[in-house]
Image 1 (tube, one colour):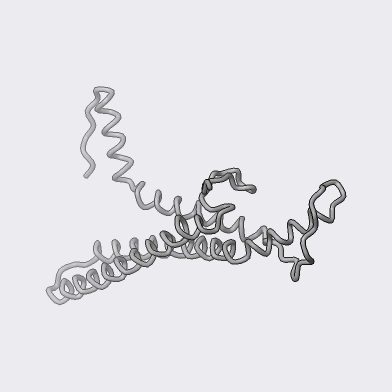
Image 2: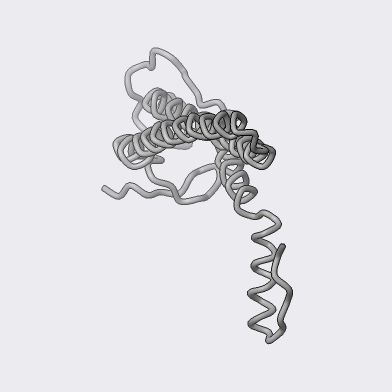
Length: 177
């Protein structure tokens, strides 16, 4: 059975929209594993940076640039980790209630005289998906990408691209200092 389908709300092709096993194996588990591994590396990196900063302060070396880097990494990690956790939470919400939503949809369709769908036994609950959860998932997915691009596109990166394109055009530009 194919695992990639178009999302009803966004129209974007995605793994596991209608196949919960595919969502679990190809989306949820990898996202959780990568977030945990990334958090472990991030934590160990911060511990190392704090140790280096402590040694540098004891030696009397200025730590302004190191502290600025630590703040930048900290802000980036919060702006990346929090939306990633929200996306995982939204996917778990979808995964958990999908079967109930399908029973409710089937019940709604069989009660409609336009469709000749046989009615299943009466559903215990008439659970419906919360539209806001899906919108938050889409927003947080985009914020993770935007946060990543903000980290990459610094002043030095933009200048490097300018130098690259000017070299292609045959112009020489002074190096970034």
